Length: 455
Image (cartoon, rainbow, N blue to C red; front, side, top):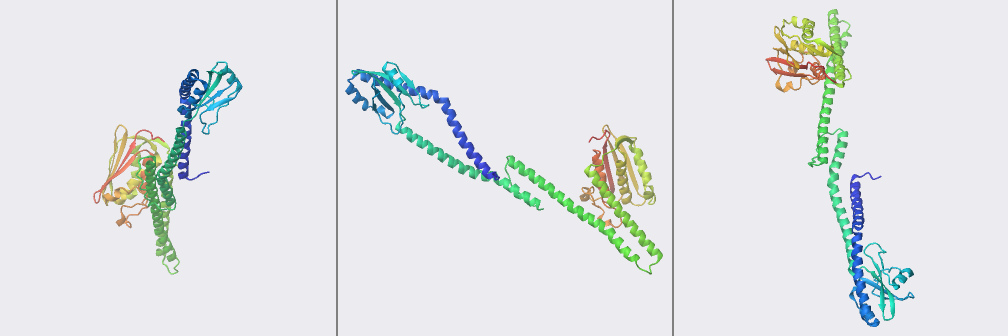
């Protein structure tokens, strides 16, 4: 089996050209066969009648001499038969094999009949005419021969066909190089990508299907490069997030081995170890939850719920966090019913409000409002905290991303809360965006459809 596309293209072309030429020859022959035969018969009949007149007009010897000198014998072969079957021929065969004349044909012509056949198919005619001479009636059989130029034309046509085939083959060899080159580039690029190298440039500028395939391949390569970068960032972030609590746990566990350690110090070290263990457990739970949400293996359990009541309950549940810092809430909540997953949506408000509380100043104010229109309901949660820089606002919904890098020790968190929020809102076919200015606070805007989300 031929595996090379290059060889396949060349062989396909050659087979197509040869098959097309043969088919065209036979079709054209079939179409014009009758016309060619009729034309040859007319010419043969006219010449045969001229020969008959010569023998009728001139004495036999003079007629024989006259016929033997005729220039038309280059195209015709004449046989004059006696009743006994003996014949005298005129003209040169030039390698042509004469048609066999049967005794039935001979007798028919001697008796005054006419024989006209095309034994070899196209433009070959055998014409038998009665020939009356002073020696009695004879039978003249006239057979068409290919003219001398015909062999030259046949040779010329053969050489032309061979040269045309060779030239066409060379052209298709060159053309197939340009045809196959982009595919070879794609093959090499695929191997490099499989080896982990995404810095591949195809530079295929064709507008054909190959060009479309190359552009699609480049887009896929760009997406794979982004996925690979996300994978590396994820591994790096997980390693970093896990390393910090593990270092603390390991260090304080070593300190607990000291014999003369005071009880209050031992208790403090244990509290730190427990806190770091809880932090790792929380991060692990968040990773698992985000993984389930992104794979969509966790189906939404839809139910009709009161959105304003749900937000109030979340605020009450977070009271220990905001009351300890004297943070106040200003609520403008319309009574709105939506169809959603209660637990998942509860997680959205919990994560956003916890962030607003965490980054608000002591004694600050958090505004929560609900606005409903015909199709959607919009929830705005605004705080007056530290704000988010413009370059970070596009990335805050990425896992492990923290906009408060300069305050990383002050504000604890795994950086996955907003990533979970984004995924839950997307599963509900909603939208979330952020508006913020450093030092002026942050507003999260969540838009949900009032209608039931579809799969």
